[in-house]
Image (cartoon, rainbow, N blue to C red; front, side, top):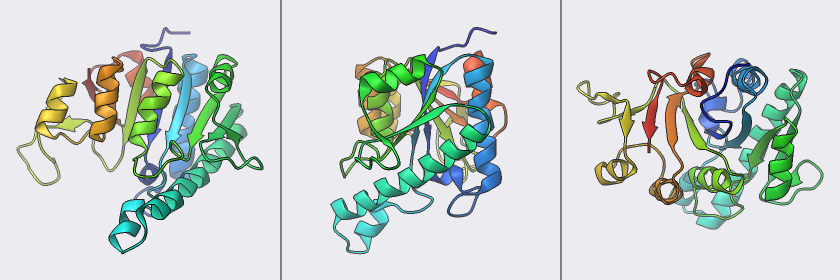
Length: 240
């Protein structure tokens, strides 16, 4: 078994990554994502926790923009992340990969409550831990709980999986500016000062304060997750 670049990571998946370019959950895309996770868990022995978003079903900011109470709208978004977590769990288990879903919002019938020491124990036993419902609090994107959980479970990096062909951090939006160039590596402060679209500023600052590197990469390209953990510097952008 090859030695991975990091032995424990948090993989952040947006809800849109589950949708395959549409809405809801695309079965083919979900199976591809699950296969990527199984490859690094079983092929490299990497401990992997997955923080899932819910934007393929609902975004709290959209509801708030239409006049809903922001806290209520965000709570709806937390429930959407649980749908994605259960879908991912089902596919992983059918591939023979043991998993546990832990939720920051208590719902004992379908998920464990998030307990730090229990999550670490699951990882040590070779299980993939899927973390749902963000932090259980409104007004935060799922970027922040990804960073927070990474520190709590003593992960060595946060892997931000993008979609729609975006394969790293660029000097500008490559879809709008044809002169935008991809950055191989960038500092936390550059991300903050230049307003680069990596993760929300709260999570970037948290990672900087806790010396957690971030890799932004296209998770929808088969093999990319393995390449990141193999140390392929041509995949994605490293933020540290």
